[in-house]
Amino acid sequence: MGGGPARLCADGPFREALEDAGWAVSLHEIAPVDEDGAEIARVIELIRRLALTVRGAVDRGAFPLVLAGNCNSSLGTVAGVGASDLGVSDLGVSDLGVAWFDAHADFDDPEENVSGFFDVMGLAMLTGRGWRALRATIPGHRPVPERNVLLAAVRDLEPYQRATVERSELLVAGDEVDRGRFEEALSDLRSRVSRVYLHVDLDSLDASAARANQYAAPGGPSLDRLCECVGSVCERFTVAAAALTAYDPSFDDGDRTLTAARAIAGVIARGALVGTG
Image (cartoon, rainbow, N blue to C red; front, side, top):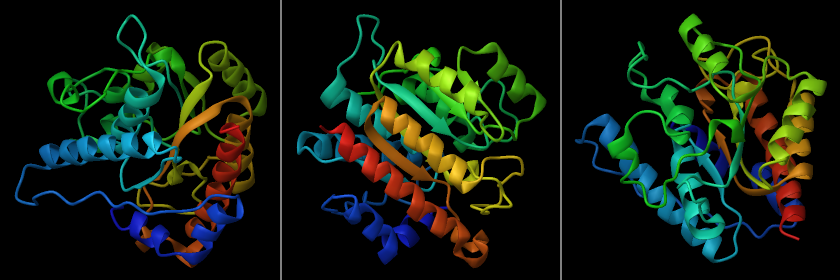
């Protein structure tokens, strides 16, 4: 999945989708870390660097669209946006909401995880669960309350993961993303926050529509439905930052995921430009 961002950046139509929406596009690549370091330490260091890069983009008045291999990048993006623009509440938590599209919850903490896959902990860390000491090293990191997170298109869950999500305060609109349930969740979230971080894991798409990576699962939204949902988020909220994640070009038969990414990026770009006023 680390090859996905490079593939998107090199794709002319992807860039054109952003420029056609009215944006002047500039590319900033996060510098690599020492490959000899421990895996988790390397990931956290990349997150720290991303947080500072996003903060710099916001300070310049730019819109951060993050292309990342994994979902843990969300910690850096939200930290960069929250620290520089939104401030924090009296409780020390971010007043930024999250709209998260993903076939997987990414909501494991270290005490319950059995796969050893660090990427399935991204949303848990973002909401303040697990790895407390490491999270504290991310510049500007503040947890997002679970009730301020909308998790959509989620469906590929182990029984313990499903139970954890059901016990949480997350707003959930799973599978193909039922319109009524999704709009109700958006209204609930809008009652508490006016800005969101928009996270689109490309395996949120139904695997028959586009296979983003080896973890792609059936039962998700079509491209049209996903674009409709992303557009609804942009209509209801100011999108402070967005991300496209988890694209592995080696699984992309016929460039269907690449084509989908172009369409989704266009929806985000048009919605984000409107949100800037």
